[in-house]
Image (cartoon, rainbow, N blue to C red; front, side, top):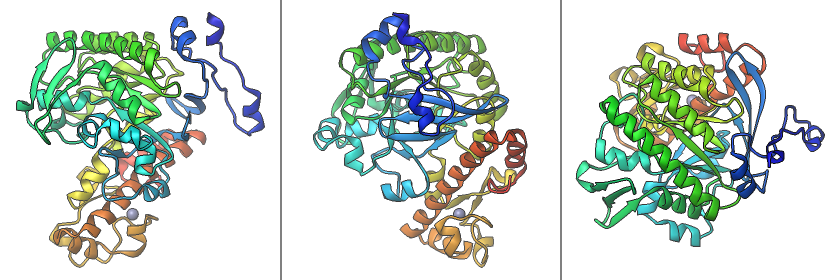
Length: 436
Ligand SMILES: [Zn+2]
């Protein structure tokens, strides 16, 4: 059985001019699981091509193409990256987007998307897609708190009154759209993600909030591990052959719970590992959670930090060995008239609605090559944003997503050139990603 878990050097890789090793079979999977499920090594391969300290650069090979890592993943919560067309998102250099199980379940529904050829075809996006499990949203309905912490909200959730029951089976809730009753369980979440046809599905978990005490967090984390087993059991039997599954490490801000969860998820037989739940209220607390978790994860697993993506968080996460980040910030900032900028004194953003911008003829960020900065002034975007013109949102979304991509692209180059420490210091200190 163990022969399926051997790490092999694939000769074709060298022919294609790739360095590093392809892994045939996932060493994370238990032998039993590997034999039953991993018949297609093209499902997901993660290749690390360069390291600098704990930072890694590489490629994730998915059925819908390669994703260069570290990568920022824009949210396509309801099947679109807000205000942008799929070709514009690809044009910014993005190779993967994140779709949301909760929202797509409620509308237009997984059956319709499947009938129309799956989420890739439905939204006109032929690159990789990762789907959220819906756990974050249904538990945000119940707890209401995680999104108010430092973590950016992955999609919006309505109020607490919509959750009917949380049990070992799953979460029963009412649709905020039509009042219809739904159940999200490990099996139902995997079934919806299978219908959407994403390249990577996330296991259904409880996203514990900061205010949950240690006892609650411990019991919830144990249940998340049982739910992971149920997700994998369903996927083994009925999941799409070429869809990968990531498990999610929980444990709140408690170091011993994070350790236990990192070990449990690593042993479960997953294709990659995400880090979820509360990461604290202050950034040092988040970095402490990452320091407690990442060294406990298998080196060869791709690691995804859920819901995090401010410029300083990206470079600090990458420094600790994270390669995938998704976050609402670039598109949400755009709707609120804000542009990402190399300004650590103001949370790496500038507010275009400020009166000071009214006659400012500079671009959003000097030296930025995005479509908004190439042709427009802060004064114009200030005017559009205050007038709530759609074009203002679009220009800011284009800039913010170009800026986030520039940060991770700069990180990939810096890791390959073994100068990541200087790059990280540059970004934290206020350098633009193209000059750091
Ligand atoms: Zn720009």
